[in-house]
Image (cartoon, rainbow, N blue to C red; front, side, top):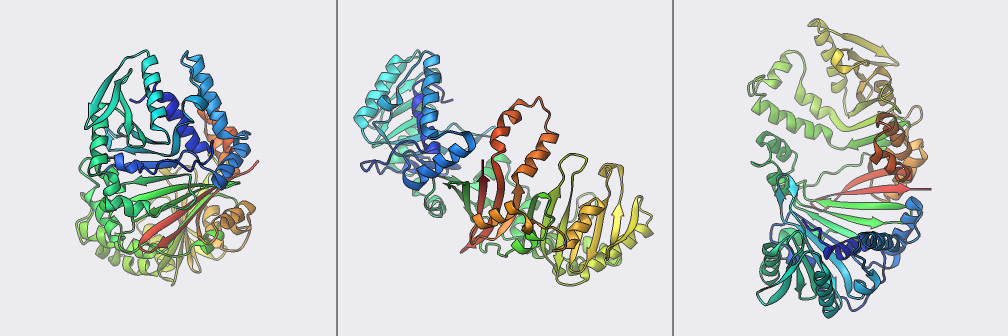
Length: 521
């Protein structure tokens, strides 16, 4: 693992600056591409600005001041780092030893997975003065308590050693830090031959990164799934995903972090949707959900996705329970036409409410273009009552009709399925189910000030998910034990989160998403 004293000031300072925005822009920085040192097929690659300037830096400092009361987060972290190193008897001076040669950007590459975790990273950091960088390496390795040895490969000199056997050296205009000697040699090979930067799969994905970002992360989604599951994704699950236009084996994504003065934005672009990205605006449906919801999200085209999933499930059957091609016919005999139900459904939304375990509730809300779904609710209710299913009772309230199911497994509240007009709601408890049907009657999310802020922050991107920061924290406080120290330490910062808004859209054949975390005093 990369833990040695030599790497501490470099890694910690570079990471701190990339996150905190300390330092100023330098016009003579290297133009090296950190991805050119990463092995082909690397699963994760993160690149960040080591010396951001302008609005990126000022916005990062504004967020730090609001959340932590720190005027300059970069300077604060460097001071803490230097103090910690001094306490350990290994002092260093960032301003004298690192800052003079530190370039504009740094990259971190993870080649794959090992026993479920990402492998040790390869770190590439731009330098503006290779001679000063080499002097730093020589001084630090010479003062290390654990010896280093000189090594050379393909004309590149580097050092190997320390308590973890790490390797460090300069390739071109970049400082390279690797797990060990073989990993450093692999980086040399990549820089002189084929690398991640040469793969169209990577370049096509990273090109969708947002302008003005502080850091961008490339993720090989298909590779992660394949390596994490051994034999790959479950065949049945893969068929269901493919029927929805998703090919996980070929999926990649890029995430960009864009700081604002009162928010942090994460933009995501992915080819998860295969040839045609999903489309649809569910913001209107989301806005009609109950105003006291601490979390809610909605999806478009639910009926189409459900229909494709039903077709796949019918053709494959349920091992040990239902033979292939029997699901639809069995339910048809009971008066339930799954194809008609799916065809009649449009969008779906889920909301959750409550501030304690006992008050938790919520519902799934489905919109329908016909009365087919409402008829189905009635048919299922009659079927369950006729078969004398325990705990089933009829529900008729406020113009809504349906049924409820009580059981020990469900807890104190029943599962309620009701329909009214163009909506069907499946809720945990009667009240949430009826609220899901209410639509625009009563106070809704669209009336909430924090929801309005989330919608505004997303701009032209339609909102599809929302979390009320204070309400979610109140619930967490009631559920998390008081002796959970990590949560208690995080609370002062969590209290600064006013909302989380997520919007989704499309860009050509890519599915896009924007996550905004609003912060306030």
